[in-house]
Structures are given as structure tokens and as C-alpha cells.
Length: 156
Length: 122
Image 1 (cartoon, rainbow over the protein chains, first blue to last red):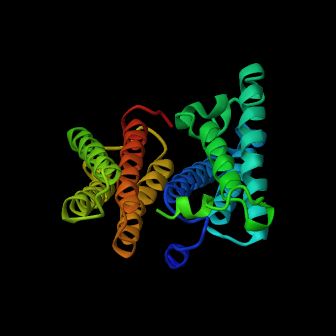
Image 2 (tube, each protein chain N blue to C red):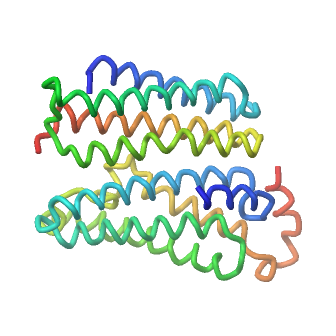
């Protein structure tokens, strides 16, 4: 609850504007889904697929950090956002491929199995949208002079 | 879970989701209709919570994982209030879209709960 209120106080911040809110909300829901599911998996049947379920838990933590990072504006959180979203993208690609070619390693569904099939491929699409978003919202220090109105356009 | 009730609930959540999405994308800020639909989705979730707690006592037992079921249900109960709180504080079209996404997410979670209760075997 505190986090949500904090989010709303920051509503004028540059990366927390317009359609970016949707990205944050969808990330939040995916983080909730991944965290809930991996908690159940680890509590009830960890021994069945330790690797897949550990990875599920790691993915959940990364989604939570990415959600928080997307709401922040400092250069440090910006880098954290890139790192976590990049990690997710690599994760969904690697685990997606592994689950197709070596189902024995991933006998059970995780967020990333079959490229996020169980989550209507949202885990595959979301990091791409996230990275596009981050690229467009990069801090002023790294933006060259040719895009002076990018921030203003997004304030709508 | 009661089968007809959970299907009706999924239908309401999908409908609420679509109405809010359309209203938001059409530029409407959160209003009585969109917030009311979100409230309806939440009320039905609370009814579902009571039903699911009472059902096993009258012989209506989940075939799948009860823990998994309640993780979904408790998460789902939290989603509409957070979206509505957001909509009340920040009155932009995007908050209406967020109400829609919240209801659609609830619909998906309800579908999963349905599968766990009626189809999945523990």
C-alpha cells in the first residue's frame, strides 16, 4: 500500500507518465502472479523440479525489482530497470528454448517455460516493450540534443 | 466454488474489463460507471471468498491444490481495490484503462481458480 501511494505522489516524474503507467501495472500483475505461483511450487513440491522452481522464484524477485525500478527516476534505478528487464528477456529466451529442447530439465511450467505460453506470452512481449520504453525515457544526460521534445510529448 | 456462480463472475469481470478499457482508451476519466463495475467485481470476489471457505463444509471440495487456489483468490481480492485507489487519486484516462486491466487480470485468475477447483487433481 505504501508503495502504491508513493507511486502516486511521483506521478509527475518523467518515466511515470502516460502509457508508462500501464507498463508498470502489467509488470506489477506479472510480479504478483509469478511470486504467488513460485511460492506455491516451492512450498508444496520443490523436490519435483528444484531447478525449475528455483528459477521461478528468481524470476518472481526480478519482476518485483523491475516493477519498482520502472517507477523510479534516478539514474541508478534506470540502470537497475535495464538490468532486470534485460535479465527477463534473456531468461524467457533461454528457458523457453531449454523447455522446448530438454523438457526433462523443465518438467513443470514456470513463467518462462515455452516462452511464457502459460501466461499468454506476456513474459516474452513485456521485456521488449519495457526496453523500448526505457530507451525512449533515457535520462537527459544520455540524450543527445536531437530529441529535446521527447519528454514533453509523453506528458500527455 | 459453485460452478454457475464462478462462470457468471468471470463473465462480469470480462465485461467490466472491456467497458473500462474502451472508456479509458476513448479518453474518459474514472467515473461512476467504471468505478462501479470495478466495485462489483470486488464484491463478487468477496462473495467467492466466503463461498470457497464454506463450500468444503457442505461437501463441495476442491479437486486440486487448496493452497494454490487461495493464493490466487487472495491475490485477486487485492487487485481491484489497488486499481480503484489509483483511479481515485489520479483522475486521468490511463487510470480507467488500469481499471480495465485489473478486471481482466481478475477474470484470468478466476479462470485458473476454476480449473484448480473443478479439473486439476492434487
